[in-house]
Amino acid sequence: MSVWQKFLDRFSLYDLIIIAMMSALGIAIKPIIVPLSHIISGPLLIPPGAVTGGLFMMWLVLGFGITGKRGTMTLIGFVQAILVMATGMVGSQGAMSLLSYTMPGILADLGLLLIGHRVCCLPCAFLAGMLCNIAGTAMVNFINYRLPVFPLVLSLSVAALSGGLGGLIAFKVVQQIRKFQKRDITGI
Image (cartoon, rainbow, N blue to C red; front, top):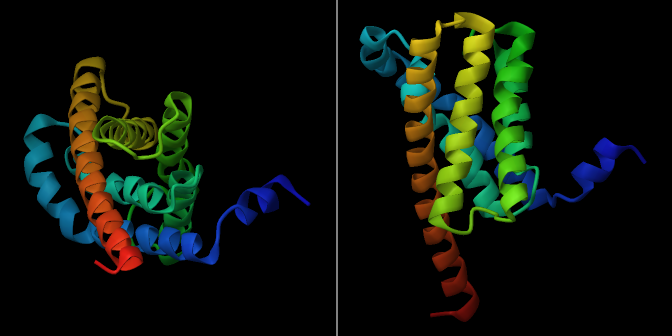
């Protein structure tokens, strides 16, 4: 049995459906949000994803919060990369989409593994979103922009804040889901 197969066997069908849904939702909102982010990011000379990336990365954090399984954010990013490459719907990164979409999940999964959290509290959700968006912004900069130092630092700072806020939104949604799950179990 391969390492990849062992990794995927940890996820139930429910988990895989959540991963697929979060991946699709993350890609589906891009055509709506990207034009709006150009209005804000254009004058600052930073990539638009740095500003609104928290709304894209929120889906990775939300997926992990729902499944509670390590590697969920990486899988969501990987599925998003496959969707983007297969449909040609968003982005112009070609095969580099594998790197730019998967790296945010990898970094956030590793970050939460290191601190031993699973989107269980506001600080770790903020950290997960922040790591996702910093990684995504850094990858897009590496692939497309190659910004000078000052705009890059500004871009990564904005990405950290935006991503963290996306993580907070994801955590609040996860809290509501957990509340409804408890209600269903207890019948109250």
